[in-house]
Length: 195
Length: 166
Image (cartoon, rainbow over all chains, first blue to last red; front, side):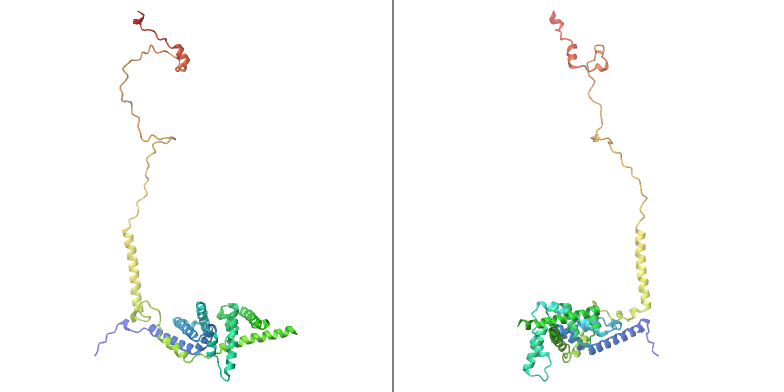
C-alpha cells in the first residue's frame, strides 16, 4: 500500500498538452515549408544579391523570422507569397546596406553558377558576358520597373502574386512591366546605334 | 515596314534581357541548402527571453491553473483595496473654507500715503507773550490779507521812543 502524493498543481493540464502539440505541429509545418520553398527563396534572393553566400544567408534569415512567428503560421493563406515577400524585403534591405561596399564581380559569380552543360569554354564566356551586360543595364532601370521585371522572370509567380509581394495592384504591375520591357529594349539597343 | 522592324528588334532585345533573368531565376540551389537551413532553425533560440524561467512558469505549467490564477487575482484585489483604504484613512478631509478679512488699506485716496505716520500735537509750551486782542485791528475777513502796498501805507510809522523826544 503506497500513499502517493497527489497535488492538483502536479497535474499536467490539457492546455499544456495542447500547447505542446501545437508547438510540435508548428515545427513540423516550418520544416515542411523549408523543404518546399527554400530553393525558390534562394533564387529570389540570388536574383537581387547575385551572390550565393549572401543569398543563402537571406534564406536562413527569412526562415528565422518565420520561426519567430510560427504560432501564426496557420493564419497565413498563401505561404509561398508570404515567404517570397519576407525574403524580398530582406534582400532589398541587404542590398541597400551593401551599397557602400564595392559591388561583387558579376562575371566571375555568373561564370561559377551558370549551367554550362554541352557548351564550349568560348560559348560559356560569350554567354556570361551577355548576361553580365544585361544585368548591368538592369541596374539602370528605375527601381519600381526593375523589381517587377526581376520578379516576372519567376515562372512560379503570377502577376497577382507579384502584386502581393510588392504590395501594389495587379494593373500597376502590368504597366510597370510594360515600361520595364520598353526601357530595357532601349538600353540594349543604344550601344548598337552608337556604333 | 521600318517601324515594325524596329518593333521586332526591340521585342527581341527585351526578350534577350528577360532570358537572362529567367536563367538566373532557374538557377539550382546549392547542395545541402535545406539541411543547413533546418540545422540553423534547430539551433536557433526558440524565443527571445530576457529571463530563463523554470518550467512551472512556462505556458501550460501549474502556475497557470485556475486556482492559482484566482488566488493571484484575489491578492491583487487585496493589495489595491488595502492601498486605497490606507490612503483614504490617512488623508483628512479639508476644513471648510474660511473668509479671511484683509485689513483695509491705510489710505484709499490717491497720492502719497502717510506711511503709517500719526499726527501728534506739538509738545512745545504755549507762547509766553499775550496777544493784545484789543490792539489787533478789526478787519473784515476779506481784508484779512491786505496787499503789500496797503500794508505799507497803513503801517504806523516808527516813532522814536518817548524817552528820546525828551
